[in-house]
Image: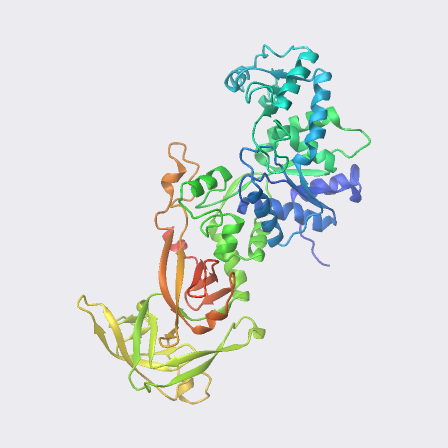
Length: 557
């Protein structure tokens, strides 16, 4: 019998509801980002959860923008979110906006006022916060809590038209100032903001708060299950209270349930903190390849498959935890190992001269594109008298464990010949500038000769200088020097920014790279996986290092 994967606790909730209260056609999910920044790797888990449930149950999933704060939201962020969700491979049923429901939310607010369940408070936000008390001390009623219905309606109208100054009043739900849940102590449901909204312009001067908007939007859309991260668990009581005021017993009622946030080591996943990195110029933008944003990871060279596999691999849980970034790196390394063609590029070059090779000769040798993919085929690479190899691949003298090039010893050049180092030339500081070698003319890889079958322990990548193209390579390290930069209460997370998170170098590559386009991915043999950056021009190719061939941090930590 085929073994079925065990259900996670979210799926168990849905299965139980299908047995008791819901029909399969009732199921509807949503992904509800606020368009005040770019999506990050933490959102990827929520995207994969909600859209994954849609695929599992053949149910619609809405993409809803909770756009209730014109001070921080922009169309740029809306466009970026849509682009990222699509890139990850998911399709939404309906594109929704909380701003679509402003009139309905306002009408319900009027109903609350008329029912004596909401009032206009004219105190400062500081006074309101002080009166709310503490978890161990009951709140105190606002002096405006018992305003008449008519006075509340009049003031709320002035808030709506903009006649009332910004910040002069708020509308609060009248619930219970003695509740043990502080969120139930007469929460604010509307505030005035005299700012232009990215969709409604200046039509509205009042904007609903998140807690009032979220559940009611779920209800309007007939979302069956509203999955939030764990910090919204205390909000569930308020979510249900608001629904109690408006829900029709004959219609489906959404239910909120919570799952744990997955934080990623050596980075931050707070949009507010990510925005600060952008605003302070620590990174070049939201899509900087060091950022944990979906756009940043995409530019770095991550694939949709690697991000989805990572998110599904860590799953959903009930307790917040810190996921080591090496798991994400493993995911992309694993996928690119299968998908990326192999090419040769030298990042830190030193010249090799093959003294017995004809000066004016260039051979075009056959090279396999990807040994993991038989369909990837072969390409031609040029070979000539003068080559570049990596500086670290040569030593004048070395012990028996050094299997690269050293004086008097042989190595194989990948896809080419066996060479032997005979002597080297140094500059005034003692740095090696040229290595003079000889080659075995009969040792060409794949030629079938006896010499080509000869075993040598080292194989090096190389590029022919005459035909090589000069490229810019951006080498990235982790953005923060500690695993959890934003949990130290005594220090600002910016103090842990890694000053060496980016190194830009000039490298040399085989000419086949000219055929690559932006976001194409390759393995620089023996060096790691790289992707073509959008800064590439006709005159200069730019590559971002996605990840090394192995976890270089494992030994460090």
